[in-house]
Image (cartoon, rainbow, N blue to C red):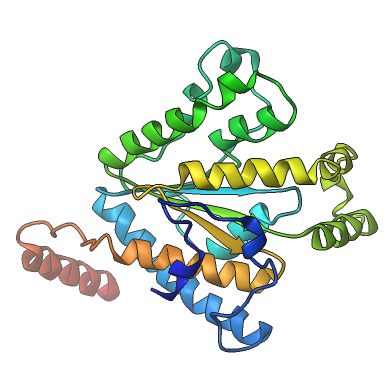
Length: 280
């Protein structure tokens, strides 16, 4: 699978400097072609997700992490266009509530894990507890540093119980982030998304990149891999994630549930009802 070039190995170390946010090397075509290709992928994902929901056996967890303006919301809208809302939901993790803070940091996360036949997208996730918490020194290093092990074991539990996990880091650069912030400020319909505090976070860019790099190296596992997705070109980001998602769904080898017994009999009765109604 050619998309594996973006997969972070579960052994060895990677450097984010080796991942170009502007890369679009796997798609043979332009932006317009990429958007058209995404529409075809949407149809495939819609079909596979419907089958997954009907079969009711598999679970899929999609984790999206990124810096501010990285494109998490846009990815969700574009990649999951047309899916059945009965079988797909988004969980967003913001500042923990007092109730959540009274429990361990994974308590609120486990409650949002997908059930059978369900796709759940984490818009930010438990990884905030080795990112924001680390960068802002909210807990001592001896606390956040052991969370890599907790997270790996937590995700292993989910996988052992039948969940497929896909983790995507949407990789944008400083220049692209600045342009997206500016676009928000200049668009009255997008100004609500701008938080002045985001600029303070931008000042900590190098600290975040170090935290993300450690996160990728320490929590990309055989059972729950990370993908570093080039994020500057939105169309390529969406096409690439949709391609990886479709492959994961296809690999589940899903089947529709067996029909009810005597289906031919029911078919005959329904035809008779239909013809009877036409005569009235």
